[in-house]
Image 1 (cartoon, helix red, strand yellow):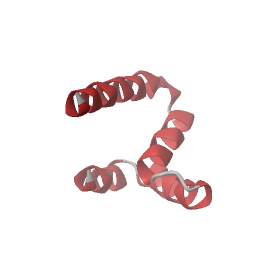
Image 2 (cartoon, one colour):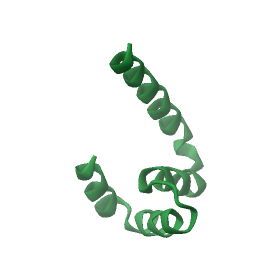
Image 3 (tube, one colour):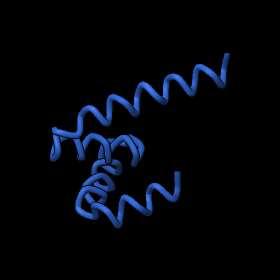
Image 4 (cartoon, one colour):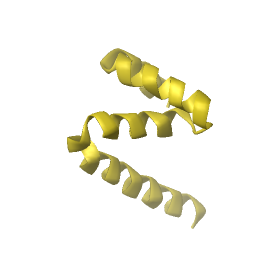
Length: 65
């Protein structure tokens, strides 16, 4: 995940900067803040966030099951 964070700073530094601020103020993780900011500024990417959530649930189910 650390590598993803570095890539996010390169690909979209403004979104990453805003996510860092949101993370500090709200107390959510930087990844969650980044997704929230990204969906606010780029609503056309909402299907990607949904796919990410579904994939995470499947992977967590496999690890615990």
